[in-house]
Length: 179
Image (tube, rainbow, N blue to C red):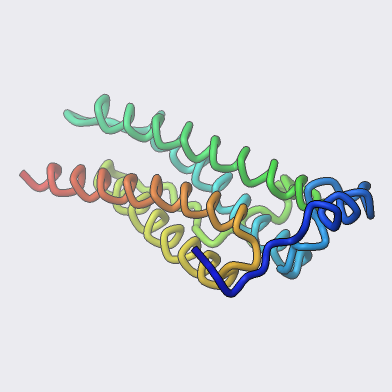
C-alpha cells in the first residue's frame, strides 16, 4: 500500500467526474501523453495485424511430415494475435484515438516484418523472430508507461505473457524439427 498518496475525498471525485464527461474513460487523473500512447498502441496494432497475416499464410503453407501439426499451431497463434489486435484497438478508442487499420502503411508501422519463409523451419524461425521483437517492444512500452497509464500497462503485460508463451512454443517446435 502506498502511504504517500493521499486518497481523494468523495465530493472531489464526484465533482471531477462531471467535468469533461465527453472524454469518457480519460479523466483528469490520466497522466500519460495520450497522443504518444495512442501512437504506440497503433504501432502495436500494426505489429499484431502483420503477425496475424504471417501466421495465416504459414498455416496454409505448412507442408511435410510436421506440416499439419505445426500449421495447426500457427492458426492458434494467428487467432490469439487477432485477439490482441482487437484489445489494442478497443484501448485506442477508450483513449479517444482511432485505431489505424490502413493496409497502405501497415508494414511501415509494424515492428515485426512479414517474411513468408520457404520451408517449415524457416516459417517457425520467422515467427519466433517476430515474437521476440514483440516481446521486447511490449517490454519497452510497459517501461515507458511506468505508472502513468496503469490500464494500458496491464493490457500490455497480458499480451506480453502470451507473446512469451508463443516464443517458447515456437522454440520447442524448432527444436523438434532438428530431431
